[in-house]
Length: 384
Image 1 (cartoon, rainbow, N blue to C red):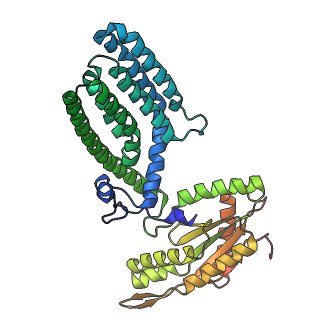
Image 2: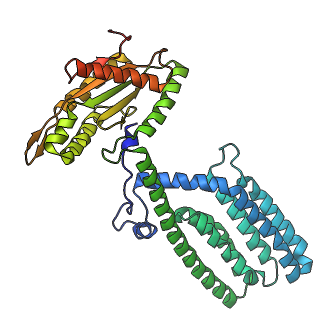
Image 3: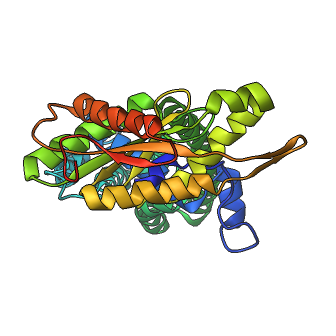
């Protein structure tokens, strides 16, 4: 869980250079690969939640245009209604996730391609229908660009109905009329692409702002490690899992020795730098599943899931040695420090994380009382 302490990376075009699509990436404001992947997952969840309502509205709109068919050619209206209804029903299963077995990309493709295809094909059956229906056919692409601004997916959705439009237009329209329609259609595609690029930038900016806000709420603003509230939340969850499945869990609480003296002698700026240095040194000793947070002025807690007493003591000792090796060079000389640690392993006597934390805290104060710069195991546990 060390990744929980990583600061969200800044936005930037992924894969700068002149590779294919690099210009589009920059225009869309694409993020670094990890952030872009997370953004895509967030957008997919939003689409999945919205698709039942959006798909239903789209389907109803396609069917209501049957009244337009009757106005244009009453004799053909029943035929076009059958086409519209058949394709809408074919795409309707895409409205729903079916317990997660239907990926959102395929759901969107099924809904849009069938519904837009119904508009194109039914219009082609009417005299001059493709020309008259062009505003509706092309207009449907703009809402699509707003909810799916990723160009590759947008192209995959728009391409089949567009090819169908061009194919049927070439068959049923006079050459000059078809050429004009194709040109207008191409211009609309350019505008839709521009809308998608702009919407993509807005959505990515919102995503980065929300992620930065979440990071700020969960992390200590000075040291960058987890804030107390978020650490307690995570620890409560891991403690519940450990109890449920009978798995080990341990914590270590540490305090910087004589930290007040550092602030008094060297100043608070040096004290802040020391807090950051200790945070980095201790975090570097942890496994990916461990996490580290600041719970007080110079007090920190490390939570170690799937860890017994012996491993926890070994980890605490590594943190103690790492902190003792810190040397901060200042204009007034070199600043060193030590830390005292208390380790507590989860057992039935600990009713909750607060009780486990209190045991580690008591062990830490015993470490201070018995000379500092040492590790103590909570009383009542092995070795006591």
